[in-house]
Amino acid sequence: LPCPHVWPWQAWVDTASAGYLMRQHLASGLNDRLSTRPFLTHAQKRWIAFQLLHAVAQSHEAGCCHGDIKTENVLLTSWSWVFLSDYAPFKPTFLPADNPAEFSFYFDTGGRRRCYIAPERFFSTAASNTSNSAASPLATAATAPTPTKHVPATNSVGSTPSKMSPAGAPLPNSGGSGPVPGRPDPGVFVRGMSMEVGGGSRPLGPLTPAMDIFSLGCTIAELFLDGRTVMDLGQLLGYSRGEWDPAVQGPLSLLDPDLRQMVQHMIQLNPASRWRAQDYLEHWGPVLFPSYFEKVLHPFFDSLLPLDADARIAA
Image (cartoon, rainbow, N blue to C red):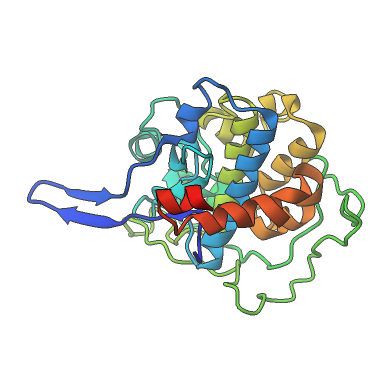
């Protein structure tokens, strides 16, 4: 299959009173699986994180951003194959930072107040109504082009280590050499229509891959924290203002050092410094994931997807 970890909407039903997006039911969502016995082992969590990186990489290769990556939107089969589902191109790209009503309506349906929305998606209505109609710092970063090649990994936000990966391979540089042939340019807004109302009071623009990378980093952290929330709305806005640090006041200090380093790089405030999902696989894959994930396990289970139940048993 071209995108074996992507589970898009499969039907649209329009009635006189409502419209319904429909997809096939799967065994469980990651949010439920984290609290269900037998609890996930450390190896199983790494296998799920590995697949999540592949899922986002496949989506972005196809030119589609998700818009609302969280554990509820990660589906698992009974044999722990991961699907990224419930794509949200119809949800607003930008949200008012000083009015949580839209966030609660579109992104907090579970009522946990957890917020994994990229900080650049929030804007200040006070700043947007100034005489020069300038967007607030929370939202202006979203309009800057994201280079295809990004800056080296950081041990913490703002600190730059050696330019060699743990596996000995050079890290992607920030030379801005342009898009990779055959791949969408991460600096270009990809498909995803938002429902904002114009008029100068709100920034406009579709989703970007860097926005998904921030949400993915928070979701991977929650996976290894056994369902503990990484940050809520107030903490995320404090993080964007430099008043709160998820690695100091938050729970990221509980993660393994290599995993924490990757997550911190994914949730940097500057969207231009976040890598593509494929870059994270290439750089941190040899450190975080066993080699047989990529060479044996992933290709084998991928080959089972087109088969029916009987054929899978026979294989």
